[in-house]
Image (cartoon, rainbow, N blue to C red; front, side, top):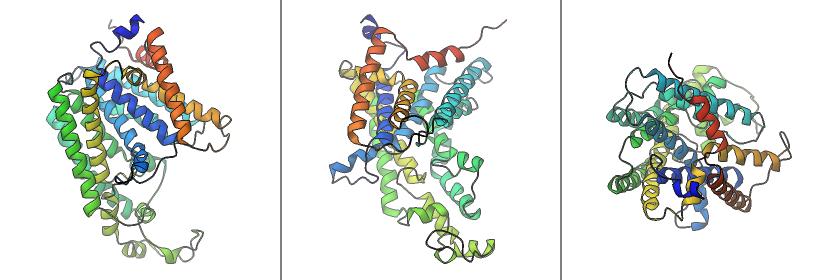
Length: 380
């Protein structure tokens, strides 16, 4: 049990591990739970929908925090050893993610893009904190309109590259906005109560502004129409087959692309990548980090299982997807019915196993592998 007593001591920050643990459990719920798509704050039964979309963005923001903690703040320009360490780490996470996708789990696996974010971070390690915040805000507020305009003018063009970088569940601009914000947060004195309280209050304010703007002036257009880029009921039959498809200019004229840009960029629901969603979910992620930092100061023993889970997020995330595959009867095994009971049991199992692993072994197996592969090589 000596490992448990040592767990969470510097340089580890228990509050960050707790936030990671929440992100993992949230993504487990998004995949295995029977959660609501929309949240009605006056109806507590819908509050489980908070895990949809927001958990993965919290996970990405914590990646940025971790990068800054690894770098111990702002890196020196040209620090190739640090850059190569992050590149190796990111590429290994990418490979693990691709291997999981081969299991055909039927869910959107975040790890490939998560790994690419580590690689992309090497380009901005030397940026000032102010620059990180500035670019993060621009990517969150301005980029959704640029992406929506490209989507509209291309009449919803698709392809592997476009789907990965711009037109997927989240365009790379959204992920980068959250990553950069996380890197800026990671440079703060996170062990100070005043900083944690500032993150909590500031995050709540930003989340309120983001979601508030979405509800007040956001789009009420049908999600499918907003995604497709045009409303063309006369061009398709009931099965979606083209009947009398016009040329590009005609479709562009009739698609009302300006309205499409606004409706898409001002979406606030999960996985829409609109400015209100990115700002709102980003603010919520910051608030969660601040809250976890505050709670961990007083409730370390109570939160230990959650922190243990958060200390091995790659292992836990991979484990729950392997469980999903097993429940389906193996790769290509079929659809797995979701339920909050399965979510709860899986969560309890992960918390218990993570705590036992920390107590008797220490670092998670995949975390140990990633650390070994990404360890800086000795010079000479």
